[in-house]
Amino acid sequence: MGLVPSAEADHEEMLDVIGKEHGYRVHHVEAGSPGDQAGLVSILDYIVVANGIRVDQEDGQLVQMIAESKDEPMRLCIFNTHTLRTREVTLTPNDKWGGSGLLGVTIRFDVLHSPDKHTLHVLDVYESSPASYAGLEGNNDYIIAVGDLLFSGINEFMDIIHHNINRDVRLYVYNAATESVRECTIVPDNGWGGEGVLGCALGAGYLHSLPQSRLRVSRRVIPIGGGADAEPATDRARAARQPEPPLSRLPEPLLDAPTRVDPPPPLSVADGE
Image 1 (tube, one colour):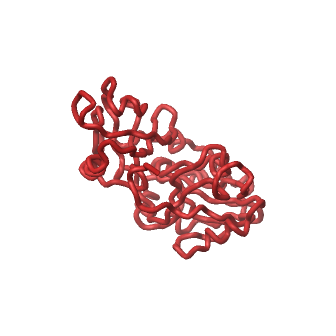
Image 2 (image 1 turned 60 degrees about the vertical axis):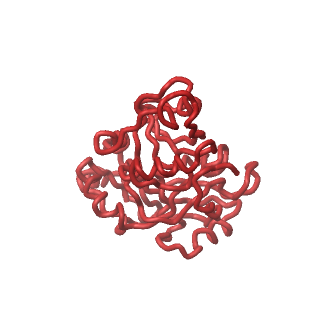
Image 3 (image 1 turned 135 degrees about the vertical axis):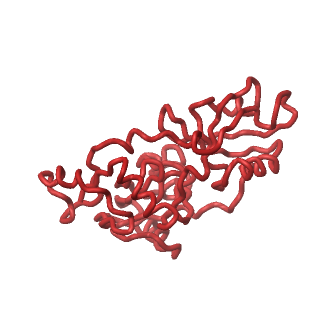
């Protein structure tokens, strides 16, 4: 069926889903990989259904499905914790794309986290600072993860940073202008010649949360399933007037073949490897 959440329905779904449901959070996505070509978004995307099966337990089933689907198309249902929408993507696990793994994606099983809990707004970026060299953009950039961790607030983030002085630290950064997530590497340095070890001002709290996505207020129908469960086009207007059900009640998409996900990396912060 098709689902069209309004802004009000989005808020209701967040209460029902965030912090309760589980899935596989997308972390690192290799450029040019099947995961990249399918448009998977680091940190904000969670794989919640694969081949018609709800993957809400860390039992190895998803990894096995990916391995079994090698060179076969596979459809995944993705929940994005920023747009509060589900979408279906098709990708083909393979070892011919030029990198490691069948998907070129690192995942981690976890409960769905609200990005508001792990977001810092980049404000001023000082010239010739570590933040400047890392390519951080004042006002438009938001740090949403550090290494393989979702930090909890600015104090935990700065603890991580101070434990990694003069070491490469990978940041996941959301840009409000492009509505995309990128990775960047920053080297904290207390001797760079200015204030702080990063050389940028950071904002936290409600006023510095991720700006609302344009997709979140779109009223376009998002198909969740296909085949016999697909909603006829003539019924879409009626569906548009109904709030989106919580994730636990979503119909499972008709997915094709399984895939194998690269095993999650060790829990580390600095990416010196």
